[in-house]
Amino acid sequence: MQKQTHLKAFILVLAFFTFHAGFSTAQSADKTEQQIIQLSKDKWQWMADKNVDKLSTLFDDKRNLFI
Image (cartoon, rainbow, N blue to C red; front, top):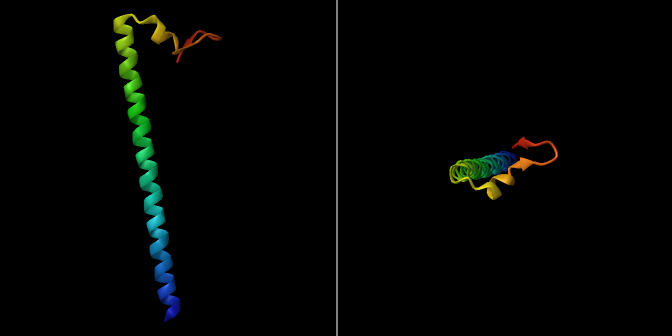
């Protein structure tokens, strides 16, 4: 009987940590996604404003590629 209680407790703890890890990863992905969206919006605004200084940070000088 005691083994079943320990097994149930172990499964509950394992489920909790699995859920928590998945939730933390989702929050991190959402934050990263929002940062990318904001950068894209900023980039378009810099292009509309012809802000060359801000846009220059998006170019790779070694290969002249727009990143």
